[in-house]
Image (tube, rainbow, N blue to C red; front, side):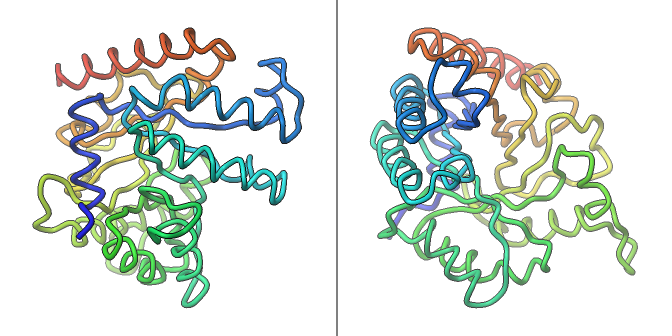
Length: 279
């Protein structure tokens, strides 16, 4: 039986620190690296990031949209990047934010969570806003193949509040409902459940939410979006040990020099480790 994602993630975080580095090859960043906005530029960018940090950070998180925009050739680059990152010891979270119902959700899950899929990743970001129950095919396949999910719960974009803060008839808002579902999925799992939430590191005081879902909390917003490692204990409280802080531009802007990328990632990982240890 495949070891669950939560157990593999806990070990990677303990050994390498909790930092997640995004692979976000958007056109402006390719230009900053002196690369053309082409498949060749995409391949060079992705290969460089993987070479620089996949052997030392816990998680790499490619944003699939930036690969998909190049069609089948871009997806081929993504396949290679995922395989190379995992071979170097990093866990891969595919940032695709898939969400649908029935057989369509099952097909999305098979694309990223089935162990034999070309794009098999350790975890997938998913959107629950067709109802949490719509994610059932992904939950079931993740359990079967030892992969995980990160469910959008409290995202850092300002538009998210109109859905996530909406109050249900039972008096609980949508975000809190998603967190409760995840806590139920992870009940009894040790050392960490495989079903996590996406919770923005830029959101300030979240003490009104129960973030202890016994699963990981993927936390975008470190660096360019304004959050710092020192903010993590204040935002996440007692759940901070299970936070996977994500940084993209804060690390990637140091490319294309491999050494500079490594140094930036190592420095940020150390700052995060210090902040979490002091919480």
